[in-house]
Image (cartoon, rainbow, N blue to C red; front, side, top):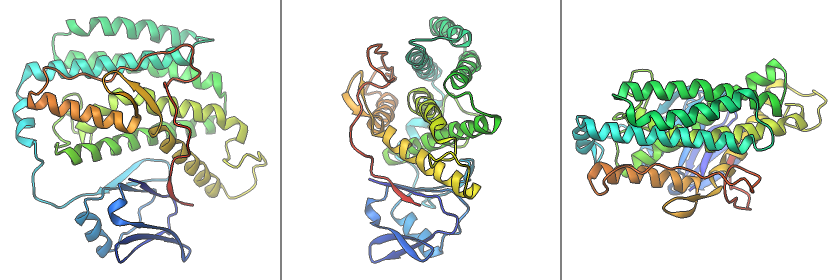
Length: 353
């Protein structure tokens, strides 16, 4: 089902019969059956009418509010008092030290593995010192995970890996797009936006299957909203967001960073940033529709991969499988991209332009 991205700050949402409509400057941009809407992401602090809020809650359609730079503003919460279906199981497993340790180790191992695979893919022809250092260090940490004495030590390994890995990513950005300080800041915002979109999508999956998003293993402190969703992003940050942003940054130079390709610097700055945001959202939707070779399910899209991993965790939670099997993608040096198989069709994106 389609996502709706609203990038204009003066957009207006209405309903007519069973359709959700979006207007901009008195022109109708979107008209879609409400039952077909997956989620709405609004890049401004639009005040939704109460009748719209009531309908969105009735149909359990999540709404995320972000700034134009992708920073989190808030979300429309479902006011339902019905507790998630599997909350009792989550509370029980929260006290299961062995379950938490094994699941955390699996998730972190997959995260390090996918980071390693990502760097391998992007350093086939040239590896900076930072990238080679990260490859070596990630290999070492993956081998050392089983000897970690506690969850806290696993979290420390996880943080150490990020520190080294993102230094390598920064070196790759400088290699493929040695842009100005302003351009570097813009790319950093796209990383943050990508992580927010990834987190939101996984949150919708958790809600769909009946898992409470606050019962996490890795991200359990007060600084992470909906921490279980952040747990699942660990496996997907490198193959989905990091790969997407680096590709986007590499191609950004041809448009001179202004999103229109003419390089003349004319036009309103806000309009250019909005155009760039819309381009990124198109790439984001296409990325989610990219097909990869899942180790257990065969050729599936990234959307399906995330759904499979959430359901794998649920099966582990219920005791239907012995342990959580994470997503570990393989490196194919003969392929030009990190992912295995790309679906050659334009992603349908409902976007207010």
